[in-house]
Length: 184
Ligand code: FEO
Image 1 (cartoon, rainbow, N blue to C red):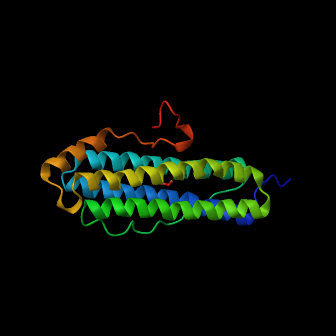
Image 2 (image 1 turned 90 degrees about the horizontal axis):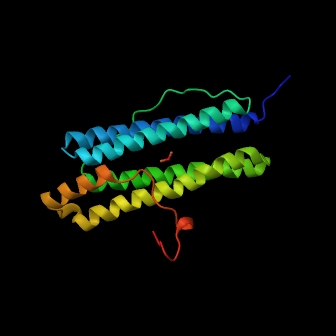
Image 3 (image 1 turned 180 degrees about the vertical axis):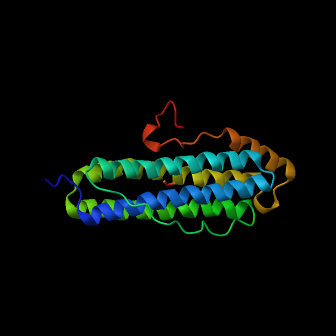
């Protein structure tokens, strides 16, 4: 008996996203290595933690496909790409990666809607929310660096930024959790 509860098209698309999340993990690992090599221990710690989050995202896609009777495929991953030239470029690239990933998640949501695959649509809503958090977090990196002086940041402000990022939580607060008493 065929127990697969995903269309072949959806199975393939989710499997591709599993590999995309894995690639994202490697991209953040490569940026973390770059940051550590530049002497930014706190920033590299932040990026390494984020690499682990991306790997977790990949595992969620893998497990969902398996749960629905499908079979994910591990693809060869491309090179994570050139390393950033400086911190401004590093944080801009993090934001760009997240926006690109959001676009990919939205494409999957569209497909679930077209196929009336409400189980997958429901599964993907977790990622829609996660992308809001990740984009917010990436924006906050850009803002923090801007406040520290951007391209012209002093060694002291970079030292403080580096320390801050070591302690920055992995998740950004969501607007839906804001209240008058605690606007976040
Ligand atoms: Fe898994 Fe940063 O998106």
